[in-house]
Length: 499
Ligand SMILES: *Cc1c(COP(=O)(O)O)cnc(C)c1O
Ligand SMILES: [Zn+2]
Image (cartoon, rainbow, N blue to C red; front, side, top):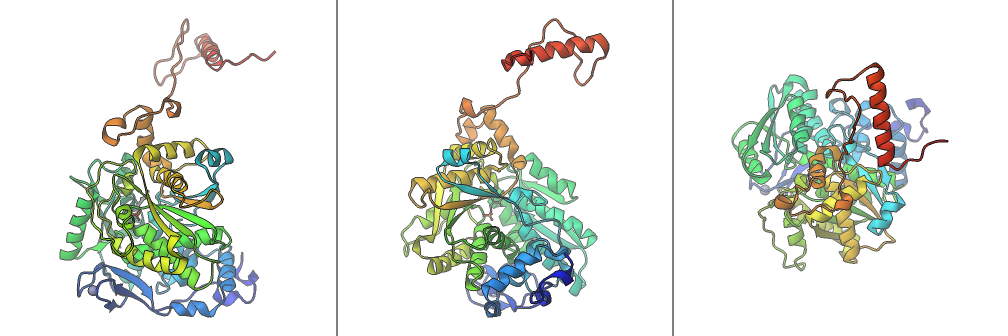
């Protein structure tokens, strides 16, 4: 739609200008730092940083209805920089000029209603937000779009050259970082550290294809993360893990979109989110709080965070009585929710702050953490994907989490849940195949249920010429082969012949 055709009262606001008063806040010592530099920890005390907008109250000067109409109209505007997560520029990172925004097709992922056959099996109606439909096939692109736009901005204003951007990854951060860096050409070089054997082949192929430098390290993600942290302390590199607070800002867009996709009515909803490094859940809480403060939404939804029993430090923390909670990392065991297999989440201090704020605003029973076992995760994924969805193992974790929350009475079947399928099913297809072939028992403790397993079938073809593998046949040979194979399939399916 042409800018001229928008309602007159919205026209001046369609294309946002740089604004706000962004800065890094230290969570430990309350120091504040200017935003035009890359910081990951507080230079004074080493504490974790969060980006906040000191002028956020300006957003309250407009009624919620103004923002709702503006964002809904903006979807019709053909302006590249506003097509992705920066649709919500004013709430997200208002200091970044649109001319520096990198847009690769991220954001505005579809929300799909689970068919009633699936809802009946699970025990409640629910929707799934299909984050696998982002450009690198996971939600990580939301944060990466913000972090890379900021980096792009700094490269321009500070005349930087040959920036080395590093991250450790359970597979999806590296895929995303490499993709976005590759769009910037020579100014940013992507380097990724992966725990060897702990990312899927599809995830490994992504940074390789994007031209990143890939290091495989022994150990698990937590080990690679420590090396990246040390690198960023000792050397001049840009860090792209969620310790980079710009990533968290970009991921707030998930909350804004859910609001928009449910007509800004979230009071009666439940958001179910898998938790690994705790960046995503932090961002979602932060985004919801901002929209709530500006009265863009009608209220705050219930939040159910989900962890595997094999990587559950956040669950363990929140299950202690309030006031007595203490955090300790756990040693992870292999989990099929591999992208969330993290024993010492980097964003935990942010989550602790935000969950407290969230409970103050939304009430004491507004934030829960549940844990689920590996079998429940696999069965949740297989159930969803045999009912029209394409969820990853972490999406399966959400299905399992929904069942667990219903089982514990934390939510009722009359509430509407929105599950975060954080990546595309195809990234994690090896877990599906291993399940089907009965190979998940030893390492993951998951037994295959025959009724859930599916395998290709071979036909017994007798009295017919058979083509060599990868070859075809012609003439009478082919005719005999086609009629024999057709008959064998019809028999296997008990088809009755047309008369
Ligand atoms: C990163 C990731 C997670 C975990 O998100 P955090 O922000 O680390 O808590 C879950 N699922 C997928 C597919 C991921 O890539
Ligand atoms: Zn500090």
